[in-house]
Length: 456
Ligand code: GLN
Image 1 (tube, rainbow, N blue to C red):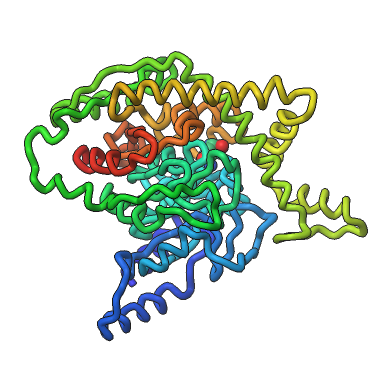
Image 2: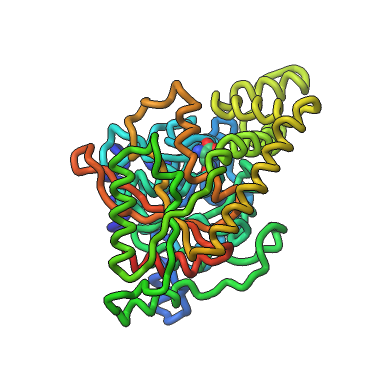
């Protein structure tokens, strides 16, 4: 009740939600009855969780932030959502997002603009901006998001909350609306590392309905946080961090660099060794990402044709019906990506764009693997700036894309990354949060969470 009151109270300013569950309280009361009957309840019993709108929910509309799916109700829950419910979580609503995950501010939603709770004249980041803002505004205890090129990490950084992008394949993508299938992952937001560990614990694991989900064992992430209780003054002794030099150079706000360097010093004071590492090809990841993500999107989004889901435009014949449905139902950024992707995949250009981007992806993967064999975890900022003003970049898609420089390589390599609030920059009524990105080895979320918990 407390959360729902706060959710509704803050919603007019923040606008994090596209849909608020009408059944949340009823579901919580059912749990109360179960508890009274001494029935077994899950680890998330009664915990209010918000879900990004590109994850299917059978009892609530799921639009992916697009007009083309306005009012669409899927016949099933996404696997991650089903697992949360099985753990007892109460899904309080669906959160706003850039249409189909394409964007970095949540301004690309077909429905509304979400504000950053730290300063409502600023963006919350994106594309999972609704989820990050909802956690920051304490409208829910935690939230699910998706991350194709930074969509969990960048809004977590802008909104001052903890965000986790798991290893590719750690969490089932079944029921997640596909953007770029080789990069997409489902992950989570919370206000502490422990909250995020609990959420990951309940959504991780193999799923027969996603053949790319990993069959690797899911360790007890919550257990790995325990040793902190035996607190020593140097709990990070023996841990080696690599600060990525290319992410602290020209073009990165000095307040961001300052917060990251201070965080590195804090890690050192806890006993860790921090060295600078060089990744000379780091900046090649951004153009490769935008070719690959747009290419995959152009194929994945062909399913929105007006025949199968959502809105259908009036037309006498089939082909104009497809065309009109897509023309009316899809937004400008989505159309731009479909055009770019279709171009990159077309016969005459395939070798020059798609194939080359794949080659660059391999180089980025190898480079990251090599540095991660020399250090335990990589450190970098999440974005070159803190949250900027609503409307500031809407007319300049290239400058918006450039803001993804520090996050996309992690997706190209499929690695896990944790974002933690690490300081405040000047701006807004009470400062603006800066996030620290920790990139770990494949399937080593446990170590990231352990280190993040000590840092926090
Ligand atoms: N901002 C990036 C993009 O627009 C990343 C989005 C995401 O991770 N879904 O593609």
